Length: 268
Length: 284
Image 1 (cartoon, rainbow over the protein chains, first blue to last red):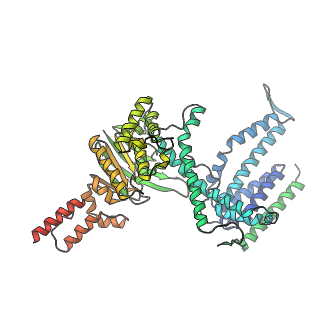
Image 2: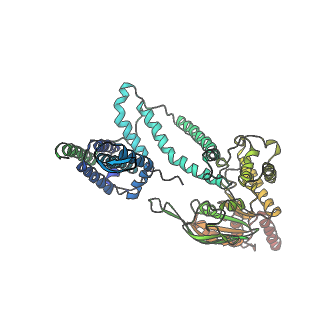
Image 3: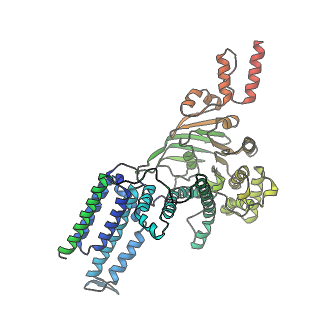
């Protein structure tokens, strides 16, 4: 019922992208997102599409898995398109009633939609090919310099990995609770907004209780293992850059360079 | 009045990396007044199967008929099916939410659209029939012991007056006394209210003592569907799929190997005792 959320859902397979260091993937995603906002014309988007397509291909993750993430932002996409389409001033294309579509409007609407969609798909590649643990490890390592200015990087990373780890557990639990209540005749779908909100009580109460219980157990288990935060803590599998990661960074640098060149020299 | 399952197939996560065929071509007929045990190892598909029986999961292919009506028919009233085929899940924590026990048990009958009085009457009867002590009626369900929580969960489904009661591992995590009490109460419901009861378990000991038909599941398929005596004859095959026959079966088989003339088909401890005494008496 609620399994459509791809964010934080790892797709297990073996590909070059899966084997990359999470730091490469994190930086890669940032580079890709930045590149999306650099482009102002068609050629740039062609380049981004190419980059995305190749990444998807070598990640060996089925295409429809990537698209799942898009479902959740479909409303946002439509609103963006509609607003840009009708509210951008410029050269008139079509006009009817009080609406008018301009050339500039059409252009920004399409570019914005593509930008948003690529943004989601691009970050989906990262989350689909990296286990949550790996991801937070990478993040912790990348943000480590912030420790100097007293940002509790390790603690934040730990909280993030716990939160990510618990998403599938709580989803599964929600599914089970829903089923148990539906078996008792509960109805989560029909009725007006107030009725629907009320019908969530039998779902939320057991869910919260279970979440608190799990949090308590986890805290206890961590304390029993003498967990005391980041100071002096070593890793069982420390992140080390390998040759493949060097190549990854190389490809990213090339991509960024081409982006800048395209932006500078290809005429609109 | 029966449930007929015809060529049922179910696949978890079709088209993904996690694709698993949980049920393979299941054929089954459940008649009124039966006391059935469904047994299988973790992941054998037993929980998936029972969730089909009250329409919580829709099969990929195949049909289920309840009293001759196709439950996948567009006009079929699922809510009515769920009140007639009551399903109690393994963890009572997944369904208890109200401020007190009594209100929680009222949740089911209220969802059926019954008046407050009638719902309360049903709740009262249901709690009584599972042997829940009256002085705890207005306690928070979260303060109860594991066994009491389970009783409340069962009562919560019983209050909907089902004809068929399905219980998923109702004795998991209970001490022997609590386990026997709950199982005895189920026998009482079966005998007094003529309810059809389906007990899902991985413990042969539990099931052997109570049920009159055992369905053994393995990797999404029905391996055996027979009386306990007949199923336990296959105790060697059962071991291969990670299950075991009741200890009594082993004792009787070993006694027979040693030359005692005992009937190896007994399933209950009491039966075994008389059988051994009889065999000893004859030898002496």
